[in-house]
Length: 252
Image (cartoon, rainbow, N blue to C red; front, side, top):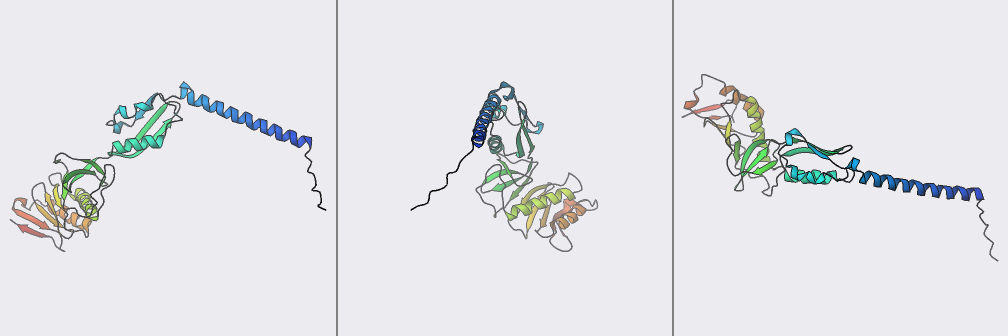
C-alpha cells in the first residue's frame, strides 16, 4: 500500500505576503509603463535641434532634419551614425549622442585630402590614412599623384581604406618628405610606385628622385638636406638617386 505524501501547509501570513508582492509588482510595472509612456510622448523630450560640429558644416541639414520632433529616447543613434558615415566618407570618428532634454549632437573630425591615386583607370582622392574620400573628375594640382599601384583591391568604397603594401610605402614616403623638405618650393608632384625597389618621385621643379622602401625616413632626411643646399644648381640636375650609401646626383 502506497504511503500518503505529506501535505504542505502554507500559513495564511505567507499567502498574504505573496499576494502583497504580486500586487506591488503589478503596481511597479504599471508605474513604469506610465512613466515610460509619459517620457516618450512628452513634448519636453521631443528633439528640437540637431547640433552639428562646426567642422562638419558640409553636412546637409536635410539629412538630419527628420530627427526633429522625435522622442529623444526613441532615436537609434547607431543607425543615424551609420547613415551619416556612409553618405559623408570625409567624416572621421563620428559620434552621435543625446543632450537632454531635446538636442541631438553630431561630433566628428573631418578627413582632408592628402593625395590622389591613379587606380584601375580611376582618379581617386584619399586622406592621410588612405581612406577613399571620392572619385575625382580632374587632377588636383595641390595633391601628389601616385600611380603604378598593384597590391590594392580594386573593389574600394568611399569611407573605407584603400589597402596595399605599395600604397602604404608611398604614403610613408610622402609623409617623411613633407617633414624633411626645407621649403614649400619642393613638393612631390607625382610618384611611380610600380616597383618598390625603384620608386620614382617627380618634384614640382621636375627633378626626379629615385628611392626604395628601405630606410625611408633616413633617405628623406638626406633628400631634405640636399634640397636645402644653395650651391646645388637644380636646373642642371636630372635626378637624385637615394638607393645607395651615398646619394648619386645625375647631371642633365
